Image 1 (cartoon, rainbow, N blue to C red):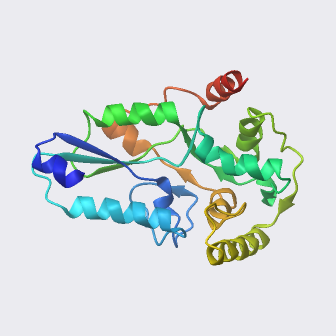
Image 2 (tube, one colour; image 1 turned 180 degrees about the horizontal axis):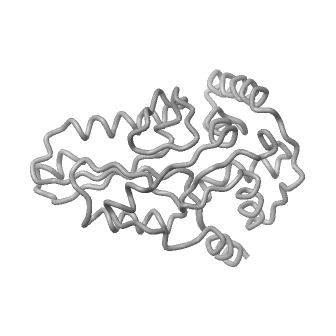
Image 3 (tube, rainbow, N blue to C red; image 1 turned 45 degrees about the horizontal axis):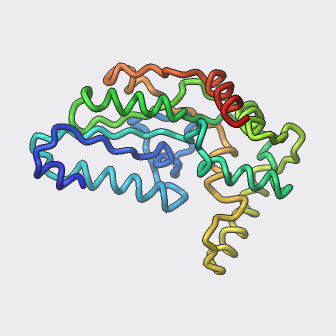
Length: 230
C-alpha cells in the first residue's frame, strides 16, 4: 500500500503502529520515541516494529510518512479489544496481577482519530509519535469502571503475583499453540506485560509536532460507554 501511494504521488501516508513495539528488553517505566524498543514479547508487536522499519527504509519521493503508536485502544464498540477481558470475567477466570496496582496507559478511539486527522496535515517525513489519553492510571482504577460499563464487577477479583501469572500464561499459550486454537487463552504474555508492570508513554513528541491534545477525557469516555451500552 505504501509503495503504491508513493508511486501515485500521494502526499501523506499515516501508519497505525502500536505502543507495544517497545515491550522489549528494556523495562522502562516511562517510554518515548528515543527509548530502546528491544525485542517485543509477542509476534504482533514485532511485526508492527518491522513494518515501521521497512517503510522508513523505502524511497518515499514526495510522500510524507507519519507513524502513530497508540497503546490499548478503548471506547464504545471496542468489542475486539475488550472481549477477552469480558469473557474471562464471565467465565470466572479474571484475576488481577499484583492487585492491579501497576500503571497502564491507553488511548480512546476518538483521541486516536483526532491524532490521525492531525497527521494528515502535520509532521515531517519519518515522524514517529506515541498517542495516548495522557491520563495513565493503575490497572485496577481503569479496568474496574471500564468493565462496569458492560455490567461486570471485578472490584473483588482475585490476584496473582506477576511471576506466577507469567508462568501460567506461558503454559496456556503453549497449550493453545499445540492445539492450534483459533482464540487466545484467557491469560497471555501480552496481558502480563500490559498489566504486570508500570508503563507510561510520553506524548511530548505528538504535542510538539502534531499539536496533539486529547479531545475526550477518560471519565467522559467511560460515561459515554456506560450510556451507550445501556
